[in-house]
Image (tube, rainbow, N blue to C red; front, side, top):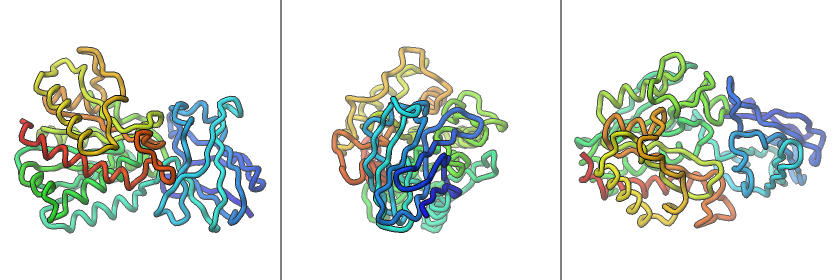
Length: 377
């Protein structure tokens, strides 16, 4: 018998009907105490060898309906290798319907908005990093559900580098990026990593929103709060995750900050800066342009043509991480955005944008940092 379930780490789906391979209708549950929804993650069982048509209804009201055209769902039989499957979107049917077509070759098939990065894998990453020479792992604070906000520290240099991701928990590519960054930074034979460890001290927070990650949220924590709108005045009642990271930043100082995200609609990799902050300096602006130009040279997966329009002078939203950190610390701070779909500049017909490409992008971001490290304060 064909069935759908999602009672596992980062699972999210509502089964409206499951009467056969051509009669499966689902919906996406919104984040707890929030209207945001778009992340889905479920298992299809009992359909080996059967051509299944899975319809997810009411997706026209999702957080970013522009994310559906051109999108292909992620599937995996072993939860290790993720590929894409035939997917279409019709905004005129069922409040907007996403139709996923797949013929499983196994008894169980997992389907997700993007390749998940589980909390179990997160704990394995922290444990593995913590055993390496010159690496320290500590806990900056705890989430509303009592989960640790883990930090990995390494390097002996004076420049303070902060890398953090998954403020928006559904953007799991951000933690794949973090895994790639940590693997390169801890490689004793990598010359880029050796230079960076000599020149800087790294503070790496792979997952700022473990509650939302486990609950299957797209954008918010356990209180239904968007953490990337809490940086001006974070509170222990609503956003202890941001408060913990910002308190640690104030203790260490910040010379470079990269907040890693995913964008639902734009099929490119890009960086958003801090152009509209009140105290912006020429030196900050030049560093931002320099870093982006170097990253564009180092990897064809990055471009500067497409992205978010910069804020007008003095109009930056200081509740957002990049703007807040650049304003508070006078440093180079950036938001890195990766696609949920594919990189249209360099498409992959099998995997689309993937965990592996996220990790390779992290390597390139570190190479670009190594080229500008001497220019940081």
